[in-house]
Every structure is written in structure tokens, then in C-alpha cells.
Image 1 (tube, rainbow, N blue to C red):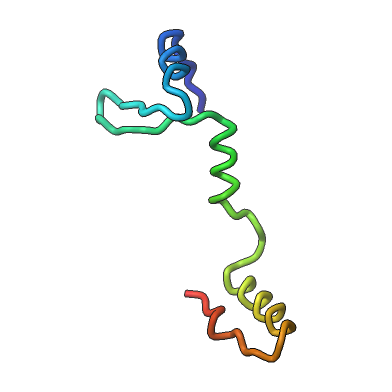
Image 2: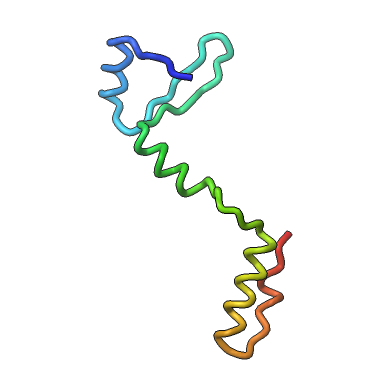
Length: 80
């Protein structure tokens, strides 16, 4: 969904900079409005779309760490 800003709103956002707090007048709920490129950076940090489950990642990490030396790393790789 896209909402087009009024000229006044766009000017207010330009004056604020990186992020703007937007208040829904009906619910008084606050929202953060950020630029698209900032959102994409945050999304890349938070969203993992890899096909690996945490358990599979733990097994793979255990195999890799096990090749480093003779230490048993399994206790460090327990997944919740």
C-alpha cells in the first residue's frame, strides 16, 4: 500500500531528516517513517530468507568448527 504525501507533509519530512514520527489522529498510534534506502538496510539486517533452519545451521556450524581442532563445540551450538 502506498500513501502519497501532500506538499506540506513532504516539506515537513524534508526538514526532519532521517526519520519522522507520524501520529494516527484516530488511534493516537505513533509510526516511524523512514526513507526507502534506510528501510532496505534495516530489512537486510533483520530478515533472513535463507532456507536454513536454526537447527540445520547449528549442525553445519558444528561440522565446520569440528574441523578447526579436536574441541567438541556441540555444547555451544544448542538451539532453543
